[in-house]
Length: 330
Image (tube, rainbow, N blue to C red; front, side):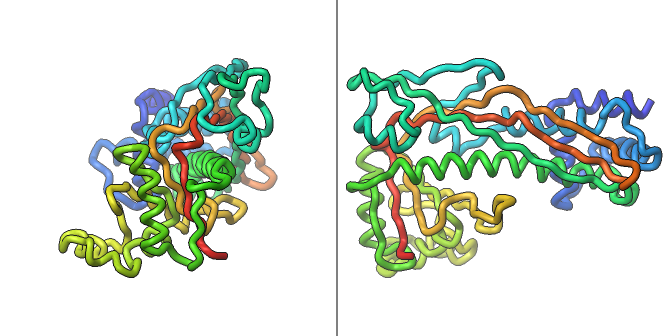
């Protein structure tokens, strides 16, 4: 009966992952959510007590609850930057766009995957990358914390996959902005009003609602730029004093990325000492295939080994002119 109940829960889109997130971050559960959690609790503890999950139900659970988040969950920032879609695992395709900059500039971004016989109309082949994550789930944790032990690692896995994708995309954006008025150098360790004026003017000349993406420490520094206070309303000053970060500056939306979020390697999700500006959609982003979750029960070590693979994403920058960046002093 317990197995059937868990299977029924997994068929409800997003519900179990939402509960997993609430448990991870110690948020209150509704009465219905508590009932779901109790069912999942008993299920996890039973597996840990028996050391037996012959049908790989943990892997099926992680796949079902995570797949909507890495493929289908709304991501406002990436939706603003890219035309997005999904292709099947074994498909291949090219992106046909009229280049806005030189063929040489595209070479720098995608490693020379440009058909140079077409100068006015290039077929760009997306760069494909993949991410995977592995973790261990000790039986003792499963017996002690039940469903919370699986929820914590499922949430961690989703964040790790999405963070890797985000890092790869903005590393490519950084590489794409090679010079000219798009690449602005700040001589100080934080942005100045003069530097920001150049940056914002470039973006606003190209889009009515551009976005700047940066680490939270630079979003905070934007609120403290010398000379900025004279342009702020009392409400804007109060908001900055309350939250410590700038959400808008000169009509530009500031997307602040927490410096506490890092890759497994310890790297920030964005290249450091940079503020990136995007004036409209810059290209395409597609995701290929489907998540594969492998589970191995290790009764000798009393743990479950889990590997999540198959998260592949292809991206192509087709309009470099919509990008700008500020680089702070080293």
